[in-house]
Amino acid sequence: MLLAPALIPATSAYALSQSDITGGLTCGVQGQIDQTGACQPDTTGPTLTDTFAKIINIFSVIVGVIAVIMIIFGGLRYIISGGDSGNISGAKNTIIFALVGLIIVALAQVIVHFVLSRVGG
Picture 1 (cartoon, rainbow, N blue to C red):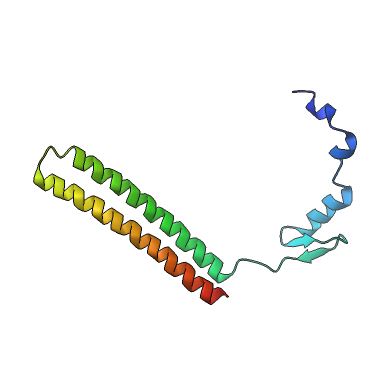
Picture 2 (picture 1 turned 135 degrees about the vertical axis):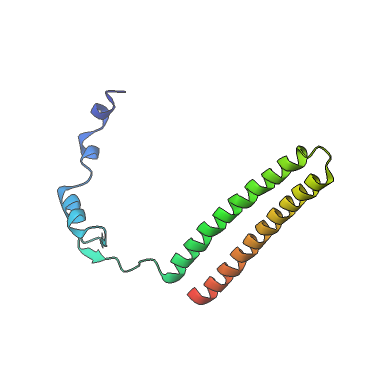
């Protein structure tokens, strides 16, 4: 294991030439180096629709996780209800509302992606 660096040939270890490293440092994170070695500015940044889609996706994941936790919580309430009709109906309502929440989140995802595909081109 300790001899692994010694087994790598010197040519593959020095695969990046000094000009590639220097060019990458001078070009920075805002540009890309083309085939000629020149730094070309990167103009393909995130668009407003991309940012909006990421926000909606993060929100949907959070709501989905909460809904799944509520389904589990409702199931546990149903199990430990002990036959009490009030506790059983409360547990059933928790499960039903969590399932409705999951359906609404799924439909919202479909609607948002449809609208963003129409707006974004």
